[in-house]
Every structure is written in structure tokens, then in C-alpha cells.
Length: 165
Ligand code: FES
Image 1 (cartoon, helix red, strand yellow):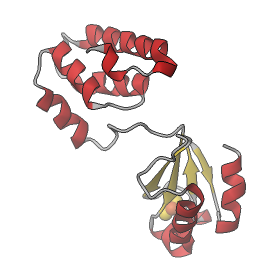
Image 2 (cartoon, helix red, strand yellow; image 1 turned 45 degrees about the horizontal axis):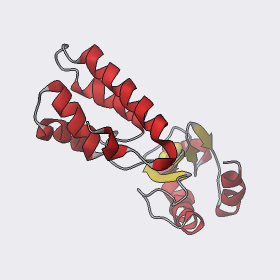
Image 3 (cartoon, helix red, strand yellow; image 1 turned 90 degrees about the vertical axis):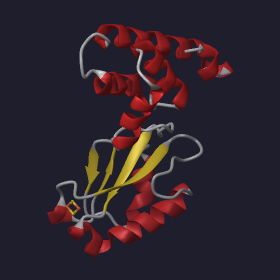
Image 4 (cartoon, rainbow, N blue to C red; image 1 turned 60 degrees about the horizontal axis):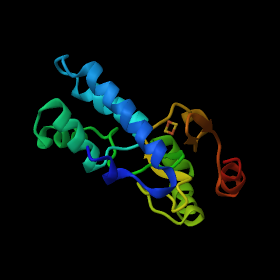
């Protein structure tokens, strides 16, 4: 990939390092059949997301069409082409959480974060998503921030929970 395409002035050396790591991952896996998903996983871990330029670079390095790479990226929901926030907030809207106020939590978080579900805050701090049961039904409604589960959450607790991040 032309590294200029994904560089920014503030973190050029960081970008270069990430691209070197991704190149190493590709070299390591490129002769193993069925390794595309593994490469994409690792590339996303390193880079944070999979923009088109990075997909092109991976496709060229593997000698496969861009459409094959893009097809995999768009098929699996765990791949993302947009930058994610530093923290991921997931509000559970499984049945137990939904009937005990999960929807109100979503509405309040949309206000507090000033974004909709699926979006990332402008400061890059939070990505906001929905979950379908996170295993805390007995203490619903529940939310998760990264891998921490908050149980029996109500709209009044949200600000103090967010302030920890
Ligand atoms: S439905 Fe929300 S934790 Fe199970």
C-alpha cells in the first residue's frame, strides 16, 4: 500500500509501525490456505479498523481481488471499515433488559453521547452499540462498557458510569 494514503501528520510514525506489523502478519499467513479471515482479524487488531486502502493493500499482497477481501469484510459483523471509539458501550436489548427499561437507557445514552446506535463520538471516546443478552438477565437492565458489565442500571446512573471513562 502506498503508506501516504493512510498517514496523518500527527501520527505518521505510528501509522508506519502499524503497516509494518500488518505486512509481517501477511508474510506469516499468506501461504496458508483459508488465512484471509485470520489476516483481517489481526489487521483490524493492529489498525483498529479496515478502511478500503488497507483492504486494497491486503488484496494486492495476497494476489487476490479486492472484491474477495471486501466481501469477507462486509459479510462478518465483527469487521468494521470505520474507526471505533476507545471504549465500546453496549446496551442490552434482550427481552429481560428491554422490558425493564433498556430502551430508556438507549435514549438517554443517545442524548449524553450525542450519537445514534452504531456511531462513534466525535472525540473518539465511545462507540455505541446494542447487545442481545449479556448474561445478566436476573439483574436487568444491563449495559456493558468494553468487558465490564453494569447491572440494574437506570438513567440516573449513566452519567456517573460514563465519567469513569
Ligand atoms: S436480556 Fe439483558 S442480560 Fe439477558
